[in-house]
Image 1 (spheres, rainbow, N blue to C red):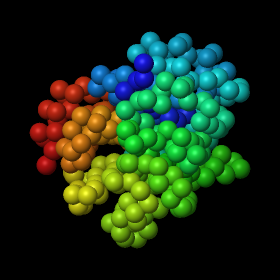
Image 2 (tube, rainbow, N blue to C red):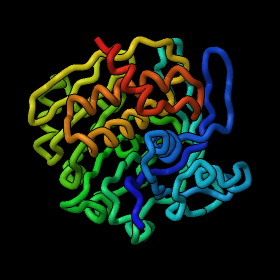
Image 3 (cartoon, rainbow, N blue to C red):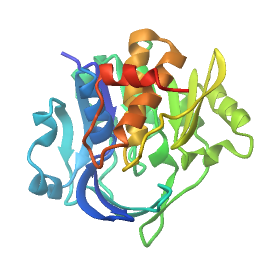
Length: 294
């Protein structure tokens, strides 16, 4: 039986450096943050990712214990994709990449996953290709893409930067695209026109999140901005993937872009009150928080 949603993207081992201290060997990446948020919203979730032998040595079968389907997780090589994330007081992040796992290919996707209602694709280090998106896209499903890992450039010393590139080959197979504050560079100086340019490449919905600033959503209904939930943010790591999981879950249920975006804004706001991969909000908690959005 197919899961409701399949998450595609590498697991990350994060070393998070905050102004208040260092936290090592934290699980990150879309399998962690979107996968666990989908599970908190009672979705059946499949994971497609590659990890290293170091992952099996440091962690028990944690994802399956938390209710995720792990048939699509493969051990390939010695190291799991590893980042050092350095945050300043404003939540801005500097990244250094220590290791990168092998690329994900269409052959890595279990055949029963192909009947899922939706795919949430969120690479972290150029591990997906347009061919992979084409392979999973069906008329009957939804594909949502966070292109952060497509836009990342890793220098010889491991420093991670963002560069603008042509996304048309990817977006022609996507229904929804979500960009974070760092990836918004691809939009150019005119954000609204940049979003319309991405929409012309294929997605019906284009979303730009900006941390503590308003989220911008472009769809057939026009352009809207949604103010963030007012909370004391303790850890912004994974907020984008929590947003993505919440949006896709609600959109699958309602096909209402605005309601889904508000649901996602509230979910991300609730999550960042907690450090690390904990504190994933439930549907009742999110719906209550939506009422507090201004």
